Amino acid sequence: MAARIRIGTCSWADDSLVKYWYPPGMRSGEERLRYYAQHFDTVEANSTYYRLPEESMVANWADRVPEGFVMHVKAFGMMTRHPVKADVLPPDLREGAPADERGRVDRPPRELRAEIFARFHAALEPLRTAGKLGGILLQFPSYIVCKPYSFEYLEWAKEQLRGDHMLVEFRHRSWLDEENRERVLAFLEELGATHVIVDAPKTEAKNLVPTIVALTSPIGYVRLHGRNAKTWNVRGKSAAERFDYLYSEEELREWTEPLEELAGAAEEVYVMFNNNGRSRAPDAPKGWVSQAPTNALMLRQILQEQGTPV
Image 1 (cartoon, rainbow, N blue to C red):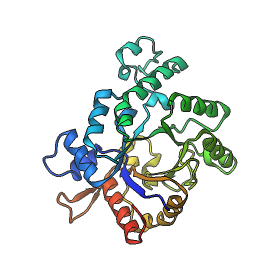
Image 2 (cartoon, rainbow, N blue to C red):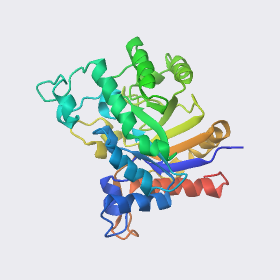
Image 3 (cartoon, helix red, strand yellow):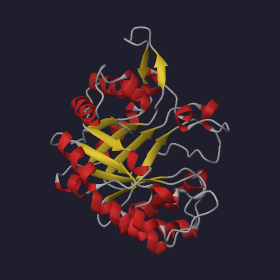
């Protein structure tokens, strides 16, 4: 029996959703998450990338979504070797954190990273207890390349997650080029981690990995970043501009066959939209639509029409 495909977005609080998707007057985070959960049954928590979550906040999330809802959580930046400002760390950890001239934590010791992982894990307990915690998304930056130390770090990070499921997204082409692809996928399978399948601009840029539809665990996980090649590597462009893209129906239909194949082989399949801009739509109340939920609903309708369980 094929797995049911769950479709959602990579945040429920991006500006474009707040301005163009939620009903007018819906101002509180609680109202928005409850509204989101009426339309989708999965989401990524994105705010956890910028600072460690607090257990009280996670408990609110768990209370605001219904039974059967699955929330994936993006790892805090230090967990994926991104630079973070020392002032976003818990106060008791700031003093011992080595910082550079810009106030960023510079080459933190493994012991500090381990403590960060431990606090991140503890804060997610309300979702875990409620049975609503999905995977932990470890999205590695483009300067983390395929080399022995990186493999060792992945093994160590998997241990630090203490049983939570690990979703791994690479941002450097070396991981999935023809030379390394087979070895990397086999390594993730041995770890019991999920290879995150990426849809992004089709260029040869080093910070763009090819779209490799492959399972390394019982979970199939697809993230769609849009295909805006013009803004992807332009200096001075924001992340919002990089992911500013509305998929056409034809482009979404390209995914129907791969998703059916994944659903036939996996126990769970998730499709998450990370395009986070706005697009003109004359028929929309404000003249614009939020790209991620618009495309998520489009893909769901396409799959429903062809009889795919979603």
